[in-house]
Image 1 (tube, chains in turn green, purple):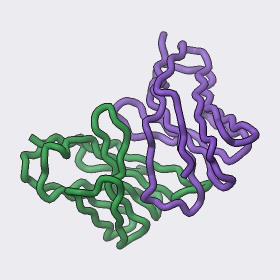
Image 2 (tube, rainbow over the protein chains, first blue to last red; image 1 turned 90 degrees about the vertical axis):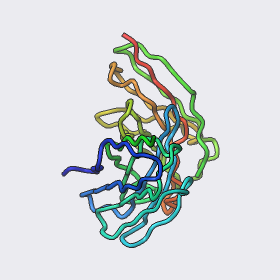
Image 3 (cartoon, chains in turn red, orange; image 1 turned 180 degrees about the vertical axis):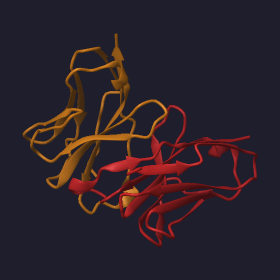
Image 4 (cartoon, helix red, strand yellow; image 1 turned 30 degrees about the vertical axis):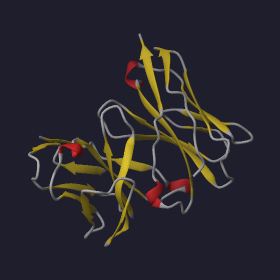
Length: 115
Length: 112
């Protein structure tokens, strides 16, 4: 049981380049999330998904797109990277959105630098 | 979700119990209290959760006051590896997944 995995672990992009971050979970969770964490700050929700084929905007969605074609995968895309998107990106999944089954399981993060 | 208030930072001596408080005075009856921690550069890690009874697992204990307006996470024998940011969150069933926030948490520093 690998839990939540993220690919890649590190990436350096030039301004204007595009890339896709992959998140995979093997716990059969319905809910998946993408967060960003800037140095010294808390996590901010970018986009989330409540099930296969559905996505929704979080707190800071601008400049990102997501897709969830398979239940176990949640992709985060940057179409035209900007230096302001330099951050650590965390993916998470959970069985429920609250109540007794809200444990979120996080991946190890992707450290992205945009120059 | 009910708002939570935590101290910005705390210190604890290695081997001693670390008691991390959280205030959630507006908590409603169906909201659970969750604790997570984030060790430097890693993804947050679930620690424990509870509704109204005290809870204990292999990592920590959670003490919730009788009125449920505050709680304390207890790490019984803190080690240097427990140095991390600790987040207290309250969540009810069927909460909008988009309201997933972690706040600023408490930075716990365990000192030798």
